[in-house]
Length: 188
Image (cartoon, rainbow, N blue to C red; front, side, top):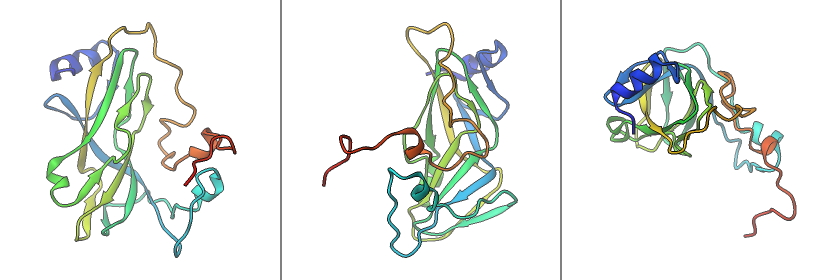
């Protein structure tokens, strides 16, 4: 895990890019302009092998907002305000803030890893697991990213992933990336 001094040095040396706040030994991730709510239409079933089915899960994107009320059980995708770039040999791990977890806000509930070569705005999954509606504010810190140096550094980062890093690309592209056919179907 890199210290605040090592992170600052990596930024100065051009090994990573971050214009946001550094707090302790982590990057403070704040909510940016783009939000994408998930909506369910009366017992809707989403076929994860069908991208159009996945796309129907999303409501209208929200881009002009100051506050957003996240009701219990709601899932909301939110872009991080500042873009991040991780060079070769650096990766990150996203974690929520315990202060928010204590009121029921789960942040980034999937894979916490940000791989070398990442370049763009991270997307966070926000879930209200508590009993009360939570009012989110544009620009509020909701998570942190811890940066790690990898052992056995490659000379250059891997080519960027085709779906990652675009500010407006909050929705899942699972079926566009992974083929799910008869030989790969899950059985119940």
